[in-house]
Length: 258
Image 1 (spheres, one colour):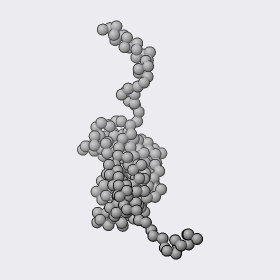
Image 2 (cartoon, one colour):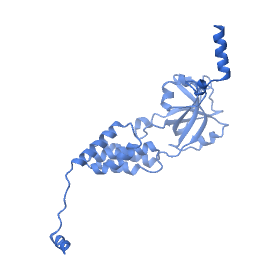
Image 3 (cartoon, rainbow, N blue to C red):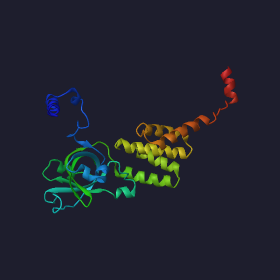
Image 4 (cartoon, rainbow, N blue to C red):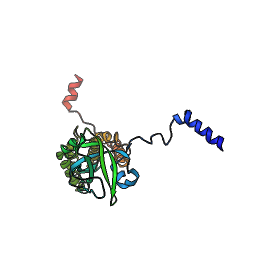
């Protein structure tokens, strides 16, 4: 038994090709990147761990709890965020921002938060410092501003477009979705608008026009089964459409013979 333990110790000290290739322990101290929703669902799994997640800034807050957490107003700035995947064009999602975010006032990033605008997107590195009544209180220890964001006009158009779609006014809805797609939108939101534009065009029997936005969306939303179904449906419809032959005018025919 002692020989076995000694051999294992020597094996570990000298290093081995097997260990060099890594294993489940290889990223033990690396920063994790996860959706914010996962942290909120199971905060105890992330307690004391630095994790990265993408958020959309909402607004500054006024929350503190110096009795059960380390966060007090004198030392920390409080703010609320939405997850990056939150569908803010939905009233329910818009009203479900997460308010327990904190950043130390003496950090250089605190100025970024103080000057942030609604819908600004950030890659945040945070740490679950406390869990109070089942909610993680997250300290921001690093942040990077990201390109692409929603803006108020785009959001209003999306709300209007979804309402028109629900009313089965597919032509009008497709037009609104097409007007949302700008270069400033995050890629996943732009792809969603292209998807919805294509679906609405298909619902209005405009199968040929639907193909372009559907194919653009499919390049991003690779796991969207409903999108693939509509795309296949449009292609099949176009195959079955009769070819319309345009008859030439009698005079044009005679002229072509000369």
